[in-house]
Every structure is written in C-alpha cells, then in structure tokens.
Image 1 (tube, rainbow, N blue to C red):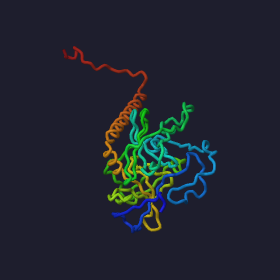
Image 2: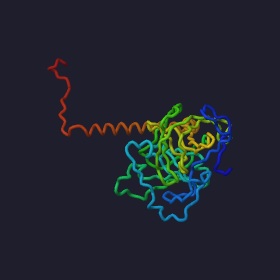
Image 3: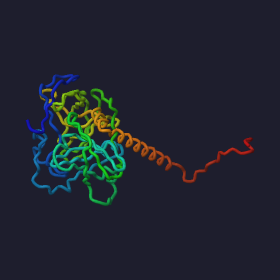
Image 4: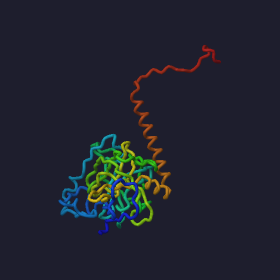
Length: 322
C-alpha cells in the first residue's frame, strides 16, 4: 500500500449495500503540479493520488483558468482557493474573514508535508475579475499558518494574518445538518491544481467509520460521484449553497464501485469548537449579515425618485396638541 493510501477500519453502519472488507481511501490531493501546467496523458489513472510532473511548464501563464462566476456563486465558487505545501496542492474554502484574520478549511492530508503553506488568491475571490486593470500581480500567494487539525476526520483549518476582511465567505451548515439520502449536492474544487469547477451529485448515505486507526467512528458523506485529484479540501454544498462536507477522497465501498467520501460538517464544527475558533465564525457571520443588510438598503435607496417630496408629520397646535 502506498503512502497516500489510508485504511478505513472498524464498523461501518447504516449503509444499504454490502461493503468491501478492507476499504482503501484514495486521497484526492495533487502532487507535483503547478497551476496552469499541462496535464500529461494517463495521469488520472495513477494510483494513490500520485501524478507525474509534465516535461516543461511553458503553458503555465496562458493556461491559467478563466472562471466564469455569477452572483449565485458568492457562497460556493468565490470562497474557493488553492492550497499549496511543497509539491502537494489541494483545495480550500474560506469559512470566516475579519480584518486581520481569515480562516480557510481544507483536508488535513493536503498539508501533511514539509515547508511553508500558502493559499493562492485569484481576482474572482475578491469579485474583481471583470475590472480591466487591477494593480499588482495575480494570482497572489499568501503564506498561512495551520491553527487546527484533525487527522481522524481529515480536516485542517488555516489562518491568514495581516489582511483586510475578504468579501466572500462560505456558509457553514449547523452541526446536525445531515442531508437525507438521495439529496442533491454540489462539489466545488480545483481539479489537478488548475481547473476550478463544480459538479452535481447525490448523497448515497452518511456513514460513521474509523479513519486512520483513530479508535473513534466519525461521520462521512458518501456521494455517487468520485472526486478528481486536487479536489481534496473542497466544499460540498447543499441546494441552498450551505457547506455540509469537505472532500477527502474516494473509496470502494461496494465491490467494483468507487464512491466519493466527504468529511461531515459535524466534524468541522467539532474542530472549530475544540480550538476555540467558533467565535471567529460567529463574528464573521455577523459581518456578512451586516454587509447583506447594507447592500439591501443601498439597493432600495437607488430605486427612490431623485427628488422625492416628503410630507412632514409633526403635530401642530391647530391639531389640538399643546
């Protein structure tokens, strides 16, 4: 078994079909790819998430992805970022942002190597992708620090310091937000470190099982579609655009059939609470609510006539009020 394989041990309950005895989870991080590199033929067939670096990166700049983003993507696409550590890279999701502190959620195995960890910010993360001239060099590499990790749920939280609050933040579902079987879900991630995309799938089941010899069963969402390499750490969203899971890989849960595996938002909430980060989420949510109210008020303001006639409503002595 290669080092990027993991064993899922112990009891798996509630699944409606027969399970294979030894479940191998293939991690969906990408190794040795830079954003915009050409993907060599046959790389998708390589086991355990290992991919070969293509010979040459001349297309690095011209192949950087153009991502069409619309207003409805403010909670899904725009908070999605690329996470790098050494030769490994995966996907991350911005889950809180305040002046001086931004939190990015990803998969723990994406950052398990050595060297500095960075997050790559693109113009679409700030909503300025349509501006003709934006100062500075894009995308921007921002060094981050790990502040929380749970290898048994395959989750990690990164912190960006010394930045103003970012405008687009994913909405976390509540701890008990467990989608029903066959519920429609959307996975967002950066496949092969170069293509930000989304695809729709269905929830097969919520399974509780032991990951990495943890001795404790954790909840994972199993989807009908399997993720591509590089998608690890990306968000899984319900039909309301709320984050309910984090991509960690895929597994052969039924003999001959692989399925996607996503760490549940319940694990995310527990990780935040265990590292006293819940208050950061709450303050960020309050900020987002204020921004939404201000935007709504601004929109209503623009619809008013420019020279509205307002009738005073003060009471007068003639009305019998002293």
